[in-house]
Length: 349
Length: 288
Image 1 (cartoon, helix red, strand yellow):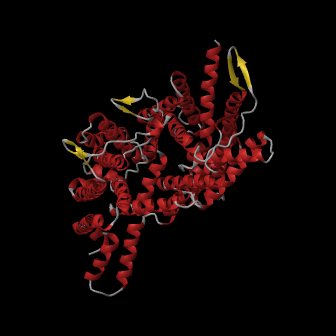
Image 2 (cartoon, one colour):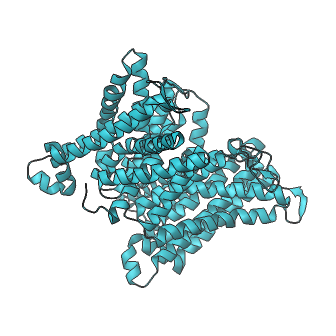
């Protein structure tokens, strides 16, 4: 089986999911609470990375404002849960509101037939609008229901998720880890299923050649809008998890720095895969944490350098490049076909 | 009456500052179709070169009009050689790489100067209109914007360099066949765009103060001005600046500066939906 054949087959999805479930079961008993808490934020951000990895890598929409949906999800959850106490509806709202927002924005962009460049500029602009607006709502007069928006101070002490109907039974840090990991695996499985379905094939066909897909009778605008909205919904869910993780949200999550980070995760990990963005996200987050512990290099400097180097030298990202490398290494060696497939699974699954 | 005059000056100032902030980007994007997301950081570098030059005892006006453009122009040449040149024709990759450059420049400047505001006081003082006080520097910005527009037009239409540059952008292969090296023209055009951004940063330094992250405040505004302007570089720049600048200042006057910005950005989104080719894609066709 060829490498591309393998990565698009259900086997790679099954291997990745099996690996994920083993880790999900094993890690909590191996790691201490602090490390688990760190892992949780990596997982939450990985969900966000996968959302952009999907819309950019599979439908070719480069969104510079994925942070907007993420931030909107976090703020929606925070505002709703402060007002409602029970977290079930806020959780749903934190998915629905960003999805609706993405749908409206996507409608303007795709049905206006705006090109890639405009797409980038508009998503960037929208992120800035949200940042500017939320940032300026520091006064006590800015509140929705009982929830003050807090402006640049953010919203502190956000009530955590609770078991539906029972406000007293709130989620524990370990529960948060399980939930975030579960969400990541579910999102991965769902997207793999979508990509393998007919709709997924059309979405990819539109990315490969929009005109040809349209001549075959597919409404490219509708499919792109669907993908974009789905990406917004997943990013919103990640935002909700983020608000739960630190019980805090502030306007910086709408910021350009946050948007840039998401793009760096995806491009470092690899476009056109779903595992790539997760790998990129974990690596870069780990790296930023390491940079934070020393004074010589500033994190912007390192992230900027990484982005430039990857665009110029490793444009396909780590996971696909690594997969190619492994495939090439094993093609030279005359061994049974079963062996290279097994090896490739490790690098590319 | 006095108030009306002050408002008119403020609106003109809003328009002029958009022209100044966007001019470098208009040249780079309009001529080369390169999306330079590090544009804001070019402004920031211009601002820092002025602050540094003044600290070394150089006259403020020499610092703004000579040191800042030359310094940032040189940075532009280096970056074009190292990064931009490898990505011509790949618009999305250029956007990503220049975004990386933007972070990189912020990181370098933060490491060198620290994350604090460095400022120089606004020169030239104020004059009074009735009961209102208006900064003379505001009038200078308006004047510079007009001179800049006319100078750009002159260079593009009247000089050999302008002709060569426009020809190369239109048909690089033909220019190459006629003995002009397109890569040199690209390099020079990028340097001119960077120098203009440096000048803009220098002009803004006395007004806003300089911080490593100041670029982010300008890059989106500059972008929508250039893209809203459409294919004609100068007419587009002037008309989009006029439109967005007026909206920004009027909304600022009616509410707060924050909502002025928001109104500007919202107007841009609505306008791009109605006029996807920009203002000069529909009106003033065929102008420069």
